[in-house]
Length: 84
Image 1: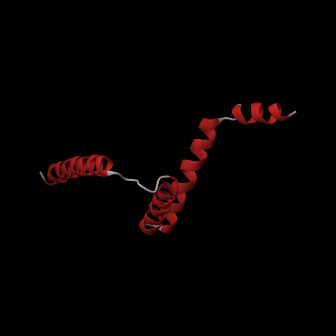
Image 2: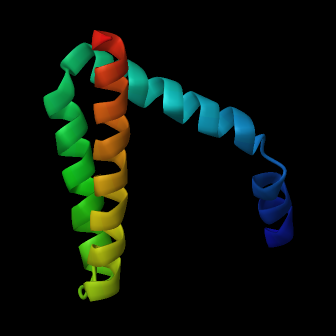
């Protein structure tokens, strides 16, 4: 019966699947380097654009810029602490 397949799918160990996926991508980036991480990020961006062609909107870009500015400030603080 079709619901058996649905029940089996829902009963999967989703945490184990997430952990395996994280380990796979960490190993891949570790082996292939930062360019692979950039390639992966670009593929995710392309997928998002296929699903939401108007992404990111003006509000999303403002939020993204604010988060990047915050991270830059945090990285600068860490760098300054290392040099102290």
